[in-house]
Image 1 (cartoon, rainbow, N blue to C red):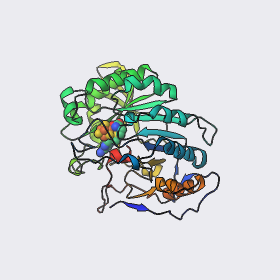
Image 2 (tube, protein in one colour):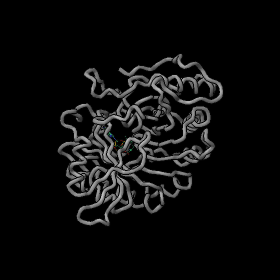
Image 3 (cartoon, protein in one colour):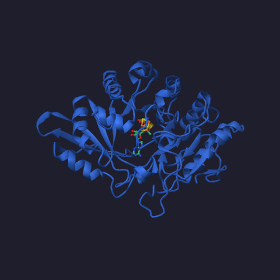
Image 4 (spheres, protein in one colour):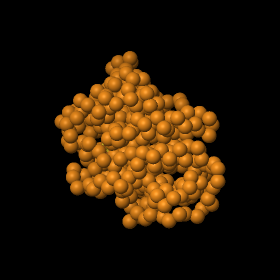
Length: 355
Ligand code: SAM
Ligand code: SF4
């Protein structure tokens, strides 16, 4: 069972500003905000076909509450980047005003806050101008196959054309870089690895292959059968010359490769591979997560949460909220522990945590 922690005690309450440091020397600079647990797709690796209960509206943070917590994170806790996710964040009508309120803030380095969106792309075409005007900088669009039948099987909805137009619109709008997230599943879409890579290189998008993590329906993940980063690279090497990209990786989860198509040197660019399971990057993790209902999770796989919503609704001051957030991060474990014999999948699904 996930447990709700009462007000944690270490480090002590703060006044003014501090950072979201943990006991292992990491400092969180990147905030992931889940704006809804709802979604208009039902990806098999993320959600069951039916029966998932949505959070009641009264339990979810309203716009003022979300903006207050983002403001505390930036102005008191050293957050420099905010990524909006979900569920499907485009389902939140007030997404643009929330982004605008975020981009109006300045970081501890007196720089604008970098904002990004992770989305399945449905309806992005109609929202892109509004989001860009609000200050949205970057977007990750999820797409696991280019085959319409497989897309409909994988997401349980026939919406491939909408996603393809979303990628085109995001590139045309100059959101840079436009990234495409692809989760690779055994026996499902390994066949799509090379076509997806070619498509993204040809359309000005950067592909990120992601190892499937144990976060969706419990019968959908098996450590021994999963498609590893190594297997993904092996497939890519059949069609592309790959060399390790020069830039420093820092806290970024993706290992980057320069790829050039063997049959056409004009098709080239960067491809990332995120080996969350087989080559964990927990030691460099700089993320903190705010769930739709206002809980802080210091890791995707965390089994404890701190509800800032409850504190806020009980009248906590900004200092008290910042202190509770800092304490929640202080207790971050050194790693996600997926390979530990006692590993237990978090109780909340990925869609409710915010991917
Ligand atoms: N609905 C949006 C979307 O699909 O992009 C945002 C939320 S989704 C949970 C965020 C990202 O998590 C997506 O790129 C999705 O493919 C990825 N994801 C979901 N379940 C996953 C799993 N079990 N393992 C790895 N990635 C997963
Ligand atoms: Fe929805 Fe994103 Fe989960 Fe797919 S991965 S079901 S689009 S939240």
